Length: 410
Ligand code: ADP
Image (cartoon, rainbow, N blue to C red):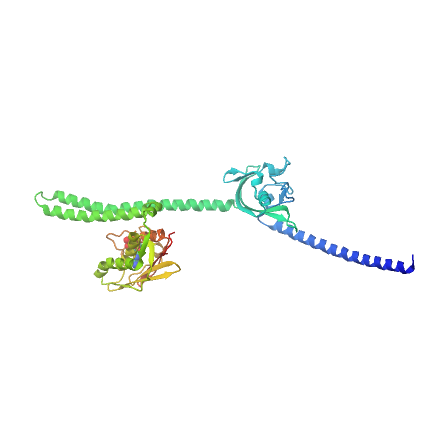
C-alpha cells in the first residue's frame, strides 16, 4: 500500500473515531435525560395522593401502580393487579369490581377498554372489594399509551377514592329528604292550626243559634252569615293548601300552556286589583309593557301577579304607590312589583317564599292570609321555568321580581 493511501485511511479512521465520540457523548446525554425524566416521574407517582395504575404491555397482562393505589388495594409493591392476567396466583384475580351492582369482567375495566376502544374511558364509578373484604368506591379514568408511531403499547388509569365523597352525598341527600318530610309535617301542623279557628267560630255560632228562641229567626240568620263567611275562609285555605301540597308533577300536568298577550294579561290583573288599592288610596302605575306574547297558563299567571300586587297593597303605605315594571331580558320576561310600604327585615327576607311564613305577625294581613301567597308565586314561576326574588328595606318598601321564559317551557 502506498504511503498516500495509508494517510487517507488514517484520516478517515480519525474522523470516524471523532464521530463515534460525539455519538457516545450524545447517547450519554440522552441516557442522562431519560434517567432524570424517569426520576421525575417516579417522584411524582410516589407523591401523588390519587392512585395511578399502568400496564407494561398492550394486553394488560401485567398492571402495577403507585404507592397510593398499593395502599388502597392493600398490596405489596410489584404485585400484579391485572384482572386480565393468566397467572392465577396474581392478586388481580382475587379482586372483585362492581359497576352499578354488576360484577365486572376484565374486559369491562377502564384500562382494558381504553386499549380495545383506542380512546379515553371514564370516569367510571367502580366498587372494589379486596381479598380482606374491605370495600371502597373509586372513580377511574383509563387512557391508552401510544409509541411515536401511534401504536398502542400500554395503558394507564387514574383511580380516585370517592368513598367519603359518596358517603357525604348520601348524608346530604338523607338530610334533604328528612327536611322535606319535616317541612311537610310542619305544613300539616300549621294548616290544622289555621283551620281550627274558623271551625271554632262556626261551632260558637251554631251553639248560639241553638240557644236562641226558636221563633226568632234573626240570631240564626246572623249565625248562618258568620258560618258562611268562615266556610269561605276554610275553602280558600283548603284550595291554597291543595295547590301547595299536591305533588308538583300532578299540578304540572294540570297547567295549560298557551300563547298569552302580555299587555292584556297585565291589564286584567291591574283592573282586578284596583278595588283593593282603592281602599288605601294606592295608585297602581304600570310602565311600558313590551308588546309580546308569553307562553303560560292564564289562570296561574294571573294568580301569581295578583298575589304580588295584593301584597304590595296590603303591606304598602296608605296613599302610596305600587309600580309594575316589565321588561324583556335575554328571552325572559321580568316583572317587578315595587311598593313603598313597611318593607321586610333582612332576617325575614330569605324566608318569605316559604310556606306559612309570615314576616311580621303583627303587620301580616290576617283574615284570609296564612302565609301561602308567596309560596304559590314561587311555585307558579318555577313551573313556568322561571324564578322569583325579593329585595326590601324595612320601612322603605319592597321589590318582588318574577322572571319566566317568553317562549320555552322548562
Ligand atoms: P300572607 O298571606 O301572610 O300575606 P305571603 O306568602 O303572601 O303570605 O307573604 C308572606 C309574608 O311576607 C307576609 O306575611 C308578609 O310579612 C311578608 N310580605 C309579603 N309581601 C310583602 C310586601 N310587599 N311588603 C312587606 N312584607 C311583605
